[in-house]
Length: 464
Ligand code: GCO
Image (cartoon, rainbow, N blue to C red; front, top):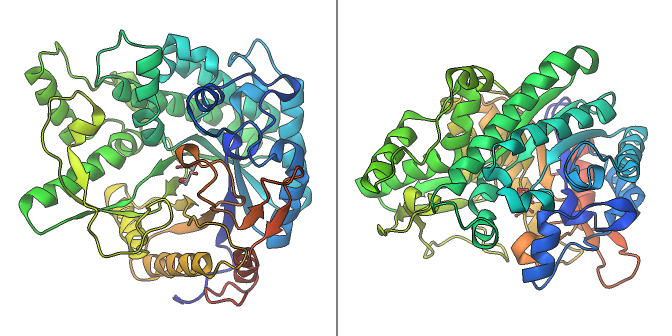
């Protein structure tokens, strides 16, 4: 097992998501989504044009072809296909757009890895509680069903939902604030997670029973974990790191692998909720049937990983929130370099997270669906090349020394794009996008050439 090179069947990919790159936010019948509304109402930047991939997708495919990746991971914009979110009204132009991308990719010899949902919930759902409303489960399954029907003859790798922890825990503060004041605090996050899990599992079962035989693809959900390291060797810091893993990953991974929430999480929330005078736990329960539906709903484990947190217990407060239940703080005074948006850079964290997944979730096949580095944007980006090399060394160590079954690596991202609350400042792209020019010119960075040589030679220290 070579620590310096990758086997021929290992897959290399790069990625994007619809809201972050497409733009064309009201073009050709697309409906508005939550991010369209939120960014235009409250942020200083938005994805109205983003990287303009809605109009420039052929340039994207050309760049991908130049780089020579095996897979391109991108997401479907729900409201580009279903403008109101419901299946009764289909936007043909949206369907055509994704058909065009998929066909162009396949023609270029690149496999699509399609994320069905990457955070851009139809705006119509905002008034009825978004992911806190159990009805979203069926709406999501309807949408996924349509996606399989339309694209599944050509798409063989599907991710249902991207990083539910992030959007269940971050985004909804705003939802609760603007639309959903009736819901007691500290509830939304858990209802959201619960409905995401059911939506995912029902989608998995639908694919299994209705499409698998004909289409013969694989499905998973994308979960994310940064390494949580105890800040000191005190018992409290150890426990804080365990609690962080429990909330960051166990909450969502355990039901998919084993069919239910982790017992520790159930206990913790039952105790807290009782002390807070709730009549039942703020963590919803799965029925017996739901547990059976959930268990084992992944063909591969899709992992996003970026960084490391040195953790210690957060001071206890009375605030009702997922964050306060987790009760963990990240220490800032750590002697490690950071990216321009404060991600701590420490490649060995990737190996340790991979090992954690192997040990905790039954040694699954793991496809790394995101790992990346943001800079201020130079075309000569030795820092990014270094980041990729350091990360890939850890992937090889993990495969060779720890026996972890890693089958693919995805660099985030193909393009500079709208980086949520960090706007356009965080440039993750292998490919530079000129946001000031009206044609959003794409230019390959040195890292793109490095990635190309790596894919061709399989050597981690390939030249640029
Ligand atoms: C994520 C996202 C991406 C981000 C990336 C960098 O899932 O967090 O999938 O949308 O751009 O993680 O922060």
